[in-house]
Length: 222
Image (cartoon, rainbow, N blue to C red; front, top):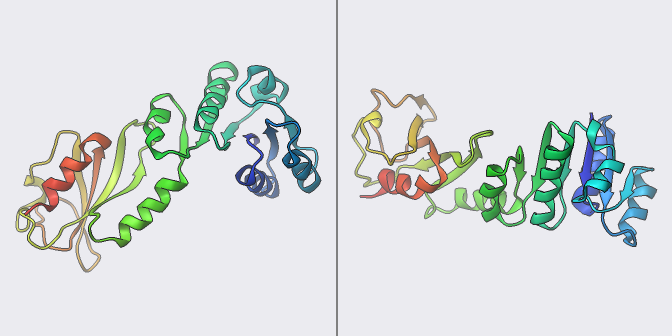
């Protein structure tokens, strides 16, 4: 595959290195022509650096974006990453775009604007924290690709929840949310129909992001 990486910082460098090791054709676009990063990447990885602004069509044209299989934007600026991906999609018909997101609040916007894959280190760390803190009872598991605003989430049922003893398929949920699976305390999976909810069950649900707080309350409130 021919993969263009926009941004020659540490993320871009190590990403390009791994992709080259896997046998892909890689080009790194580094914006600052006076940056020592360009020289460093060239010294470490060879002639795979193009100096220019990855947001500009002229730079992407020079990079041969029209034949690229994927463009990955990993600069430290969310706006630059978004623009680079949009230009690659709209102007050069790149089949797959991926963007690094520094502010998790921008993730939904990126998806609505057609970016195929978004990666947020902040969100990943927060998800791990939420799994360790009992006060955070709704944990995002993954975004559904091609479905802007939909997530798969995990909710652990606390003792005293008003839904304990009810059949999972009968639990009243907010519009835009649906229980797909329940895992009991012994690790056994159950479908919602015919299964009565117990304390410490883990409920796996698909929900619109804007309905997640309502879903959490519906499953955990006393």
